Each structure stands twice: as C-alpha cells, then as structure tokens.
Image (cartoon, rainbow, N blue to C red):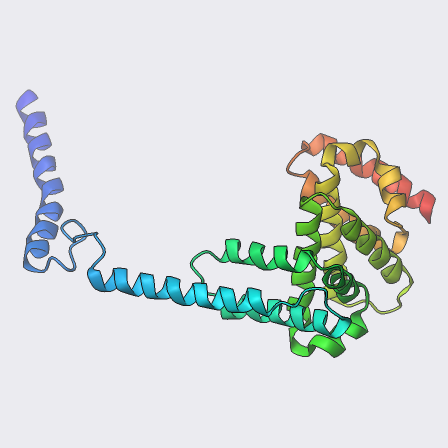
Length: 253
C-alpha cells in the first residue's frame, strides 16, 4: 500500500514538472517571450522614451499653467475654464495626471472670478451650454472639482452657496436635465463629506434647511446621502436615518 501511494506521488510530481520544463525549454529558445527568463529591466530605448514623455508633459503643463490669466475679467475666466477643460484631454497620457490637475485647480482657485464662474456654470445651464457647447458636461465636472478643491482647502462657502442655489433653481424648474440632477447629487455628496457625515446625521433638519431642501429635490438628496453614509453606517442605522429623512420630507411638503 505504501509503495502504491509513493508511486502515485512520484507520478504526480512528474506530471507537475512537465509544464514547467516546457516553459523553460521554449524560454531558452526565445528569451524575449519567456515569462520566467525575460529580463524585466527597462532598455535604454524605453528609458529615453520615458524621459522624452516626461519632458513633453512638463512643457505642456508649463504652457497650460502660464496661460491661465490672473485677476481676470469674466471673458478671461471663461477662457481659463476652457483651457482647464481642454487640458483634461490634452494631458490624458500625463505621467502624473492627479498632481497636474491639482496644480491647475490651485492656480484657478486663486482668482475669485474663476470661482464665480464655476458656480455660474453649475447654476445656469443655459449660460453653460451657450459658452461651452459640446464641452459643457466636462466644464460642469471641472467646476465641481474646483469648488471641492477650495472647500478641502478650508473655504466651504463657494461649495455651500452653489449647492444651495442649485437646489433652489431645480426646485422651481419645470424641466430638469439628467446632468443637472447629477450635478446637485455630486454637490450634496461633497457637502456631506466636507461637513462630516456624523455631524450631518446628528443635525439633519438643520443641514437640509440650510441647503434649501424641498420635496422636488428629495430623491437627489436621498441618493447623495445613501452614497456617502453607506460607507459609515450599518444597514440598520441607514434604515433609521432614512425613516427620519422621510419624516422631514413629508413635513416639508
């Protein structure tokens, strides 16, 4: 019995070694294709290409940042935002896209005219469509990013005021686009995160009133709350929260 088991083990080991032997054999014949023997170190050509890409990215970044006008008029602010929007596509292959985007946002945030424009882009859909045409959706995304960036830096008022205004605008508007509802949802999410979810849950009525909550925007607010709070509250706590939320909504109706 022992011999049979040992024999089976031996055959099993041989069978396991066969695929590895094949890989090694063909790897020796063609090292370029072998997953085991291929040299992982970058070639000189690859290093040069990486350096060239990095240098090109730096030139592009410098060109974009230097083109953003400071102390700008409304028309110059529009051009600043158009430039920022175009940079999202121009630098799609940038080695460190996140860092570059933060540098662009940092530059834009220093000029109050750019902040006012970001708010207008989100609260006046007719204006945004007329000024940005096919890029209006990207302009709205970038405007939200700018307001969030400023809020994370300590100034919550532009984000707060824009969220409140958009909530009021959509509450009164007869026809609201999917993009506008999504913008409000994103803004409310950021407000919850900036204010701190725990604080918002404890001061729900105050938070909703402060952002001009109404039955018309209830579903959008609810979606925003669920997205943020599901990461911090249990299922039971979420159910209790939304019970309270619906009670406040019914009183607002």
